[in-house]
Length: 113
Image 1 (cartoon, rainbow, N blue to C red):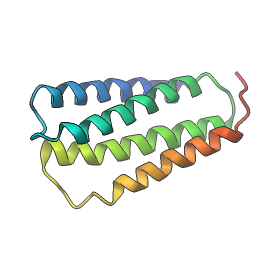
Image 2: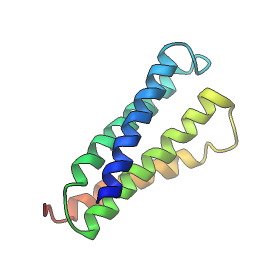
Image 3: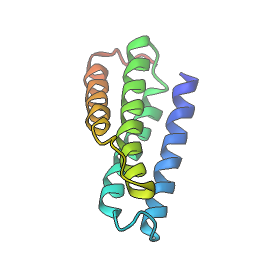
Image 4: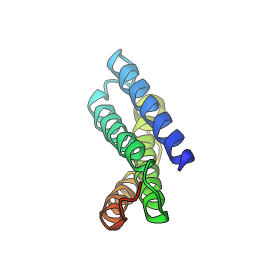
């Protein structure tokens, strides 16, 4: 669970950097898209930190799905906003589906600490 804790903390930091960068003019006027991606990633990072203190494989898998899905979802949006639109837009819904799967799995994971 230590790796999940580290990944969640780094994900939260990256989300804040992306939000601040977009707010200060970078991102080609796509602040709305970066805002959605950043806050989705930030909320997922907070969830990852909360899940990291729980024990069990289901909790670990749920946290990995939530964080991985958020990274994929937000990453595609960040690339499009800060670099250049690439034909990767189809990956954002995959990330969203992974996050949803992680939350559903978390509902059935025992809350052992």
